[in-house]
Each structure stands twice: as C-alpha cells, then as structure tokens.
Length: 173
Image 1 (tube, rainbow, N blue to C red):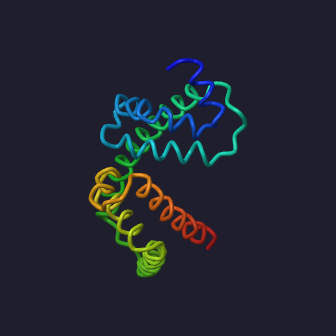
Image 2 (cartoon, rainbow, N blue to C red):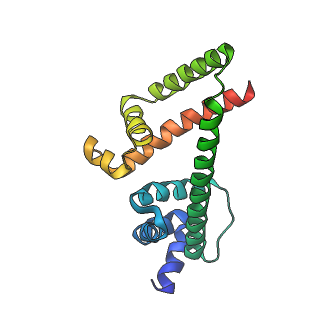
Image 3 (tube, rainbow, N blue to C red):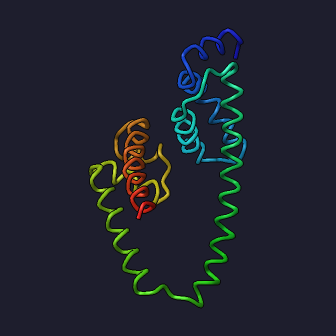
C-alpha cells in the first residue's frame, strides 16, 4: 500500500480506511489465529472503532492494525478466562443448585430477552440465533439466507442494540 493511498484513506476517515483495507485486515486476523472467525472479528473491530468519538488519527492504518491485534489479545484472554470460569462453575454447580427465587428471576429475564430479540423482526432474530446459538459464521448465514454480508451485519447490530437496552434495564434493577 502506498503512502499516498493511505493519506487518501485517512481523509475518508476510519470507515474509509477499514473498507479500503478490509481484505488485508481480515488476512491479518486470520494469521493471528482467528481462522474462520476473522470476518466476525472484523465486524467487532468496525463496531469498536466507529462507535468511538476519537480525534483525527495521524496514521490510521497502523492504528487499525494495532486495534485488531489488541482485539485478538482480548479474545484470547476472554476465551481463557471463560474456560477457567466454566471449569470453576462446573465444579461449583455440581454441589449447588440455584434457589427458587433465582430460577424465577432468570426465567423472567430470559423471557424479556427473547421478546426483545423477536421484536427486532423475524430475519434479524433468525440471523442472531444462527450466529450466536448455532455458531455459524456470518458469510455462511448470508449465503444460506440469500442476503448480503452487510445485511447480516446490520441485522446483528439491530439485535445487539435491543439486547443492550435490556442489559441496561437489568443493571438498573
């Protein structure tokens, strides 16, 4: 990539640089160990970088690559912590069962989450379940449903936004 192209991309903002270097960033994530999940990580990277109100970035491509590397480290740590937590939870849950009150609260919260997901529409709900529950990658879901990858990403963002609202309600109570 030439410096003049990087400067042109920088003029378009972070989104322009992300779009112009999408394949390069996905390859970078794949090499770092993301494998088939590179597309999904790119989506997460996009969300992280475009949701923030940041000032101008002098050198946007290295900034994005550093953010991608940090995202990979976060994923590695998260996966490791999740495995440790699951192991500890499995050991603890073998001896304890939840109280009746906890079970009822959990069922009520689950019902609210299911309602929020369903309220986003049939297609976004189905895409969300295929992605998060069935573990399908976004590209396969797009192909299966006959929609573009960006439609899958947009539908996932819609469901995530609805879940964020529910999460804030849970945290407030």
